[in-house]
Image 1 (cartoon, rainbow, N blue to C red):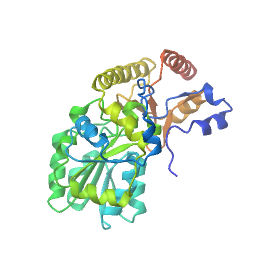
Image 2: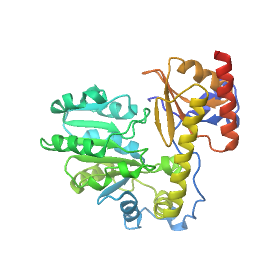
Image 3: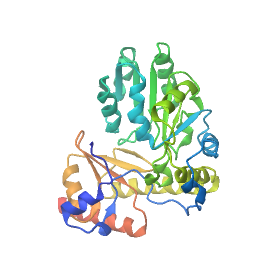
Image 4: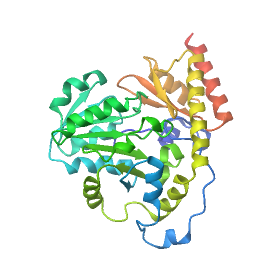
Length: 330
């Protein structure tokens, strides 16, 4: 298993700090949502049905003509490599490690690319895979550039696979409306923006023929009835989404400002997290963990990702810890 953020129990055991005493900033998941609607009893007692309104609500929310609900975008990440013969796959790095692992597991040849190297490598690829905005760097690619790469790949039957797990706060950068074009596949995560990672729900946006193949591979009832009912309601809650979007944007800017004020200017980020590439990353990670604050440590490059505190108490706690590190390092 690859390492991920959110391993709070492991951190609690390692540092001897009770689970409830941690401030978990190790994920890029919204730390708050809004009151959840009731789930009908039938969602628990009947097998899920695909005419319950979820797909229609998701198409409206994402602005996509065609999509497939899946049990978290992770399900699609693991399944999509099985829909192609072994080929050359370019992965823009650093990025969410599950992508490369899934393609490598199915025997595909992977080429790790920098952003600057994409144009030079494109003619040698059948698949180009990237995260937009990127995790953990927060780097965004312009839609026009992505669509140009898609066109070049599609000419020879290739794919552009874009993971848009963190794009909900900036939907104007999404390629969702273009997913009827050949060779374009977009992954969307429900749990991150809505603050409901435990629901295990995501969507694949692509041409109907590809979605049908993926649907057959994943099998029936991939998403539970309660998850479908809850997501349908939240995807239709436009006012709630706007409040969430504005709060996340403001808190993302607040986090970047707090880090700068403590001499830790972010290298990149987005509304849901800030990324700090720094030679002191491992030291800072351990310093914060000793105070019950969990961040996400990356080795290549040496860096930390900070998620958002859930409340004012969390903000104050993070500020005190960063100030103490600044004084400790002086």
